[in-house]
Image (tube, rainbow, N blue to C red):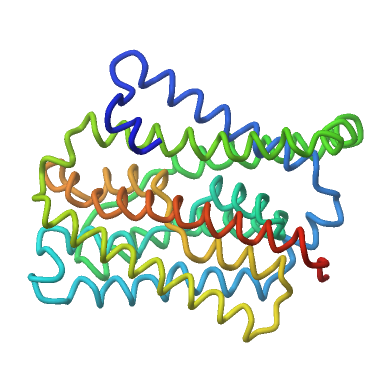
Length: 308
């Protein structure tokens, strides 16, 4: 999808069409998971406070500290022009759709992922601008549009699926492979749409090839550090395998969907492209890496008994 978007990005009239298709696919994912999950599983997921605290700590404490450290490195390591974008990256909430998709593929605790990722995004509407203002000395407010998008596009379809579960649940449960295809398809569509927009805006022309290579390495190191930290923390606190999967995927991601509108409010247009570049690069890396990790978890689940 990254290569396809680089060669044939969605532009002109096609861009809104892909954007609408992406929103529909994401809403469908939430509806299907709402219809598939039992009411007891949802309640258990929402009330799993130890898991949620650990994910929020990784998202809004560990990430900002690590990103501040990377931004403070010498210019020969961290490009000066991209340092503010790295800090802003650390302030963002977790993803929702890809976290749920990867958790479902890896056979983790999907109910807890829905609750944790949604809480991260709702809190991020307030926390991200505050963190950015403190760490980057930016000024500006934020809009409630992101909150409305979360409610309309994510929570309402999930609730609708829960309400319709007695009628459509058995039909969906009998077609688990179809749900898996929808999860994977939504992730591919998000990657293509996001990368297409960046290519059309000409974001890759604003930095040198060496800057891009250094940014790729920095984002890769950042992701690896957080993946390992969340994995070890989940095992240190003795979470089961399903919860470990949720913590790893929710705690290691940053949301491009939330980051772009927030950055548009907090930063002037001339600075916006460079601010968004680290988010774009990290977003692609996290999707690729987590796809591999999710499939590894799924393969191990095929050969090992599930724990509860």
